[in-house]
Length: 354
Image 1 (cartoon, rainbow, N blue to C red):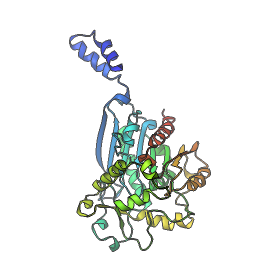
Image 2: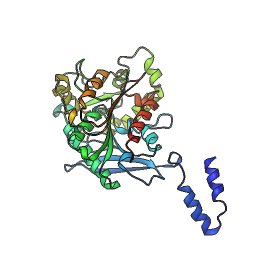
Image 3: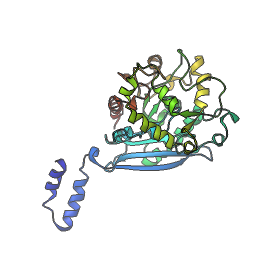
């Protein structure tokens, strides 16, 4: 109906004036109704030999790029961004939802994940090499993506969002690069672990990477939930969509029966050397930008006590908030209450627009 009104308002124009008038009216299309533009880039990492996959989604009519509406996502320890941030569930992904709010949205896959370069160690049996892709390395990869986006859009700052291990990556990056960060959102934030090991840690010796099967994913998704609750939160078709995207993100998966994908073990070693022994990976007081901590109440991977412990330590953030979403797990972004997550994150970023 709105489009019909705009067309009627332009209908008095004739000839070449008609074409110009219609072009002008097209620019008035609300960003939420505009087609989305998707672009994929391979960005050089800080060290030679590695290329990082960066994806951008934005409304076709978006022409104003400012720190408050440019957002970079980074994934967690296991899956690629395609299986999380840009996973279409019933036709809609989180990236696309954010883009339709007028944002210029990006994700980056750090080395070893998704379409980014996989370290040579991943071409050998896992136990042939030590764990690869530790947090410092991942933070440098984020830095390369941040600088690429800042240069591309001609801005000094952008906003950041990390999920799970990605919250540590983004926090570590921010502590030494506050001047490049507008706002920081930490979804399912990790911190010092006092109640058992991470669900990504099966114990025993660690090789360069671990092999993730569909059975392992299903078991992890149901951890701590009553019988039948997993299907209610994440319908089987949604879990199947996640698995399909996760397997597709690793070409090696096609050689496996049953299918499986690889995930670097650097994050697991970091957990053993830091979070599991009471040693902070970074100093929260070094974060000097507005910060959001957000998670769901049934998160068994990064339980609520972690966020509650971290929150008061953000002593130099000019503003901060802690949001808990009911009836959700570590991957509430792929569950029935995902729109609650999307809206809270959008509200936080929207407040920083200038």
